[in-house]
Image (cartoon, rainbow, N blue to C red):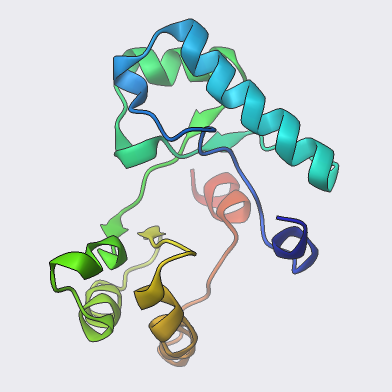
Length: 147
């Protein structure tokens, strides 16, 4: 986490234990956010607010409103790169194609940093995105600029 932060990447909340937020109580949701917030802020000296991504993308109006009352805005993705589906036959080329075949201004791509497939394609995907004239923005800049 410290290395990611030192490299200039943003770190936002994704909960502590990765539960489906639509199936747990408000107390549990708050605990998930607070535990992660405490750990991350102790490590890097910054808050994970204002954004979070709900695990599995599971959200509903109540989760959005309750999260907002805690100071969080949920951010969803436009395109799931499906890098998490390696065990079902998805290949690195599939992930790369899914991203590059769906390039569009304002898109947010869901990828997983610990995933083997992402590591295989990320550098070439970034190069290709840039070569096509797109700019990659931080989440904060993208959301605050284009929301």
